[in-house]
Length: 216
Image (cartoon, rainbow, N blue to C red; front, side, top):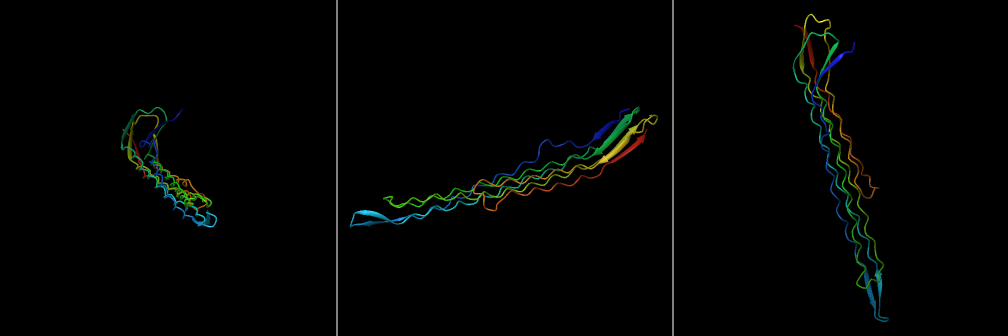
């Protein structure tokens, strides 16, 4: 004969906590210094004394923000369960709801644009310089902490004393929510030592429940 299982627990969360925000874009690099021209009056030409310098490297993107911590699991509702005459195997399982999963860390900010090259001079006799290198992507934000499992409850199970079956019972602790993943490194020059954020920690299990089974 099949066993009927009755579960009393807190309602689950349907979504994880919000993710962290993306970091800000780094600042634009400094403009390069200008070149210098000189005029040769003997042949009426301009020449380049020294060329302009390239633009400076862009600034590093800012770190993504931390993911939102998960909320505590919803508690098991306390109360009395009246089963009446029990003519088949029954198990009553009681425990708190699962904690909410945490949000993921925000992605690191994009590296700032490279600075403009320095001016060649009014007659453009000096060779053009290059735009500066894009800045490094920012660090990803850390993931949030998972929510703790929900609190347990005391449930009284009444059944008819003349029943052929005595209801069984089990308790469980509300499961902890998962920590959020770390956010990814921001877009930009990728040889910078910046990286993804750290994964958040899981929550703690919920408190114990109690089931009191009694004939009436």
